[in-house]
Amino acid sequence: MRIADGLHRIGSDVVNSYLVVTGDGVTLIDAGLPGYWKLLQAELEELGLSLDDVRALVLTHGDTDHIGFAARLYAEKGIAAYIHEADAPRARLDVKKPNSGWGPIKVGPLASFLWYSARHGGLRIPPATGLQTVAVDEVLDIPGAPRIIHMPGHTPGSVAVHVPAVDAVFLGDTFTTRNVLTGATGPKPAPFTLEPNQAIASLDRLGDVNATWVLPGHGPAWDGGAPEAVRLIREAAAD
Image 1: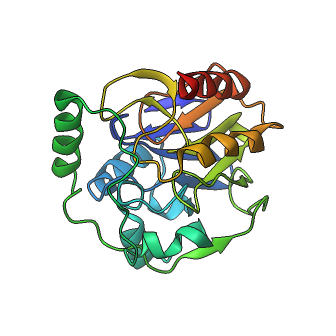
Image 2 (image 1 turned 90 degrees about the vertical axis):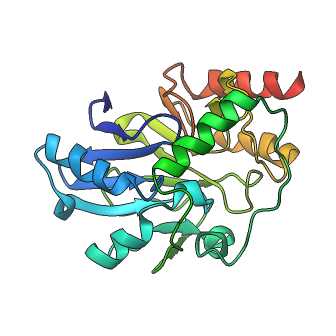
Image 3 (image 1 turned 120 degrees about the vertical axis):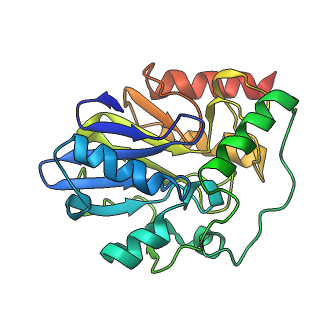
């Protein structure tokens, strides 16, 4: 699905995986669920591209619904995902996320999320392999030249990925535009966050980011700009 020039999403916005498409190739942001592998190939084909045009995968964090096809991409194309070192053990499934930080729950949205995840391979997530760690504020030499911004809180190694080339910042689960546990919409703190106060404090690190597109791990794309998204997330957290 096209979001804007050079910016695409695969799957449903229940679980997001993105493509940054430039003249130098494709950078993937997050690997969604294992079943997204076929969706990735279909999206590339629609763009007149193939897996051979994929140059890199950047993970916003190591939770299982973000590493879905990372192992297969490494096995078949030799592309090792970029990730913050604090979340590398999580992506390898050496660390299990504790059952905390869920927040309010409504049965309908939760059931829909679990059913969607199961249908796309979410019950059998392979551990990510061949990971390469990134430094804070590092600008990666890959299509789109993304800058890595450390955003601890949801997980210790959560990052934002700022890609000025497509006027976008990818925030993973630093926020959500549709809460998978309640169905609430609009920029808000994400559920399953390990350190909610730290996650809100990390928003300060987006002070110099003025991207139009603010893209969550779950929920529809937001085009109201990063400063406004940050304001709304903070406002929701204070309620």
